[in-house]
Each structure stands twice: as structure tokens, then as C-alpha cells.
Amino acid sequence: MRRLNYRFVVLLLPLAGLAAREVALELRPSFLRPGLHLYAYVGNTGDGTITAVDLVKLSPAATIPVGAGPSGIRAHPTRKEIWGLSSAGGYAWVLDAPSNRVVARIPVGASPYALDFSPDGARAYIAASGSNSVVAIDCATRAVVARGRAGRGPWIARVSPNGRLLVVSNRDDSTVTILDAETLQTRGTVGVAPDPEQIAILPDSSKAFVTSGSRSQLSVADLNSQALLANLALGGTPDSLLLKPDGGELYISSSNAHGLLVVNTQTNELGDFLLLGMSPSSATMTADGSTLYVSDSAAGHIVPVAITTRQAAHAISVGQDPRTAQMTPGDDILVVVDSASDELAIVRTKTSGLITLVPTGPRPRDLAIKVF
View 1: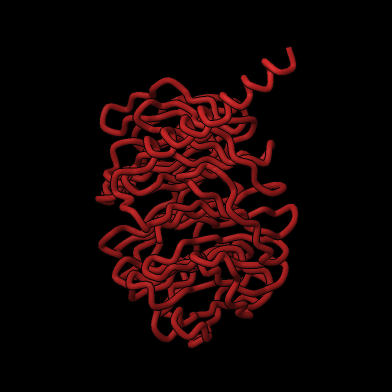
View 2: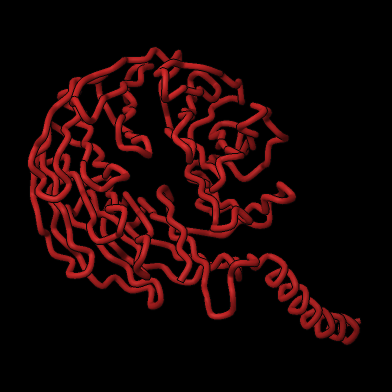
């Protein structure tokens, strides 16, 4: 009997290897030509590391220490680099994607949480909440090339699509500061709803939409006149903010409203509302703006929403507490961070099915995807 079992195992191993190879080939996105890699990078707040996950092999490739409180993880638009912040350490770090090594740590000020890149990728902008300041970093030399002042408790700094302005939400004084993106000189300050956090800017750089972190409100600011246009009542506290690629609509997931709020960005009015589930807390969108994937952190699934028809499809189970989600280029694969089980869920969008769960580090939160 033991001899038969041994032969069975010997026979099964190569078959399993062939099956894994076929799955990997099938899952390999069509745009990913030989020699290119597709990775997800997950920030683990529990131990200050980044988990690099190979999205073709569907397995962790490396665990890289970056510093306490990793946040603001972003893939550089033109360089083979992943940028992020150590909110506890007060610095930005730069990860070289091919080698999975941290190649720079750049002091930026106390308690940074988010960063943004200029449209051409030449600069990175970071607001330091603990020092009420903003810095601009040259991405090639990794040197701080400009410093500016924000309001109290700056949360996020966003660059306008034309690259001329920097808009900063200041939580502690309920304002947004508008700065010149080149010099970081202040151009104006606009009072907004309490505890402003997330920012979305229209493609023509004319208006900024700013969520309140404590109220069911969304502020609309005119960036040309530096004036408040509206404070919209939403009926639910905004959790995530997504702008349609053409700028015509803004999509806001709200966990305490249990759905998705749609804002008309031309009229500055709240339009549709879609009831989605128990606690829809974050969302991501396909590149063509046709489909939203909304994470329900309480129900443990993702809800696909067709934007044109406002129709929700069958939910996709992805784990215990799905949070941050992103699409891979080509929209073939949806990647979702599960903060409760310390895993990354990989979903095939064509079949709306969970492929696998890949282990990460403890308490994963932020996510970036990079092709190199």
C-alpha cells in the first residue's frame, strides 16, 4: 500500500506542476510581453514592511522593511520605482522594483500620510501633517527642491492635471491651501467642510472636490478664483472618492449610507444613489470608466457596478475584510487587500471569480501595482 501511495505522489507532482504552469499562462495578461513583470506592492502596518507579490506566479516575491507606519504607496508613472512614506519616521522611501531594495530615504517632516506625482513624473509632493508643511522632491535626484506652508494638520496634497497647482486639505482648520506647484508659494486659502481629507480635481484643473472626514458633506472649490462654490449634503459620510475619466461624474462610497453616491461635477449637485450593501468603504474603476468595483468591508465581498446603467452585478467573495482595491493594466485582474486575514485577493474580472488568496504581512492597508 505504501509503495502504491508513493507512486501516486510521484505521478501527481509533475501533473500539479503542469497544471500550475497552464494556470499561470492563462492568467498572464495579454499586454504583458515576455521580459515584463507585473507586481502588487502591499504596505503592512503591523511590521513596517512591504510585500511584493508576483501577479503572474500568484505568490509573494519579497518582504522589504521600509519603516514604521507605511502609507501613501504609489507606483512611479515613468520610473521602475515604488514610492511611499513612513508616517512614524517622517520620511519618504523609494523602492527599486527590479531588485526589491529600498534605494533612498528622504526626510520630509513629521507625520506624512500621502504623496502625489506631477503629471510628467518629475516631482513628488508630500504634505507633512505634524509640521504643517509641504515639500517637493525631484524624483531623479531624490532631493527636496521646494518647501511651502500649509494650514494646520495638512492631510493630502494633490497636483492639478495641468501641473500648475498643488491643493492641500488641512484637517485641523477646515481649509484647503492652493499653492504654486513650481515654487510652493501660497496662491489662496478656501474654507471648506470640517476635517477635509480626500481631494479630486477635474481634468481641466478648474475645480476641486474635497470630502469631510467627520460630516456627510462634500465641498466644491473653484481653483481659478480660490472660492468655495458649494457644500453638498451627501446623506452619508464619504469613504472613498473616484472621478470618472472624463470628469463628468464623481463617485463616493459611503459605509454608513450603505451605498454609492453620484455627484454631477458640472452642476455641483448630488444625483443618483445606489444601495449596495452593509458597508461599502472603498472602490476602484476600470480605465475606460465603465465599471466600478466597490469593497464591502463588513460583507467580505466586492460589488461590480455598471456605471452607465447603474446596475450592480453579483457580489464576488474575496475575504473577511476587503479594503483597498486596484485594477491591473488592461483591467484583466482585480487586486484587493484583505486587512483582517492578512491576504491579497486576486480576482479575474472576465469571470468575476476569485482566483486565489496570497499571504501578505500583518495588517495590510495600502496597495500599488507596477509593470516593469
